Length: 489
Image (spheres, rainbow, N blue to C red):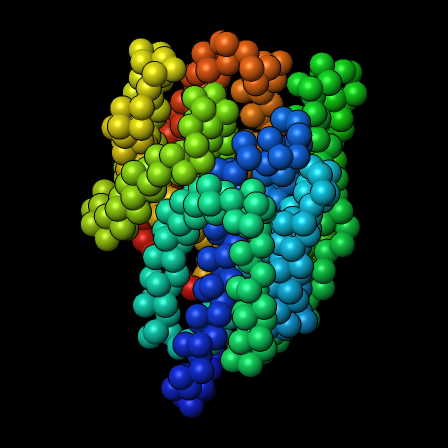
């Protein structure tokens, strides 16, 4: 998402132009490509490790580097679109994403793959914020509800398609390329999106005189790196003194960032006045905690199934399907039926239901050990997925309920950014929650599966803790949740 678009509303003739539906198909395909790319990598991590010899810290950066770069660039990417043109930034982003995908697929080793994934995240941060802005300025108000509903369905489809597509492409080992097709598949999609986008998307930009907050961006980036880098590398290096110093300095840098943004005139990177709204501040905290919690779960779950239990990639990908279907079903039900009647309680119920599912999973892992099967996991996955679905759809409206319409675009950009930052933090914490226990286990060790199962069970307690904290923070959300007003076009 991006800063509130202020372009002139489409004329009647533009609204009637059928070309806008082709433009919609292009931007939604690009957004789908990004969504799939986030989830498709996790399922291929064991194959990447085997083929490249990537260390656990490299694995964290392969997954977390994308999330971090994407999160850091979201608000800036949206602001650049408002200043220089949303179509221009979208096309630049999709071109960069395609090139970075090629570099990922052609990587000779883990170092090149990490750098290429960071470049992918930067390009995604230029591309994705323009999607909703382009939709907003392309479609008249009476059509936006239907269009945003289609966008939501596409998000749900991405959640299901990512793990399964990653499993299939890796399992098939096309042309002997192992895991590389999960990135190379983006090339024809990106090239087609670039050509069609240049033809069918109409350019738009803000009428306001906006500027990029360079100092704010530098401070935010530096603070995050000072915290995340030692979190990712600390376990492998034995937690030397510099890791703790770096995290402490990172906190100081965040303080400087807040002080600077508070005094910044004109176009600050973050509108700090939003945090005076209780529901918004609490909702941002929920998003951060929930993102970190899910970041931990999805990575350790994939490694547990493949590296620990020895399941093939397709087996692990199919195991994720019940979870994804439960998420999609509950998400639709929560918005259409439950939230209008029960409000905040739906989100809190989702956190509790998901927590129950995790506890069931912990019991199953402890009880069944390394002999656990997919079918025995399904009950826990369905409960977890249902709980997650109750949260992910209404959380944005809950956070924005008390935000003035003129700030909803900026607030939405912050929500997306914090969600990605939470994911990156979670992937950093995996080093503490999981890799410390399995990092020294040889692939040929007879107790490898048992060690991974034990580490996975311990990691799930981190998930329980995160969900408990998210549940408590939700008490600060408004009791009644109403759909957020769209910013004026």
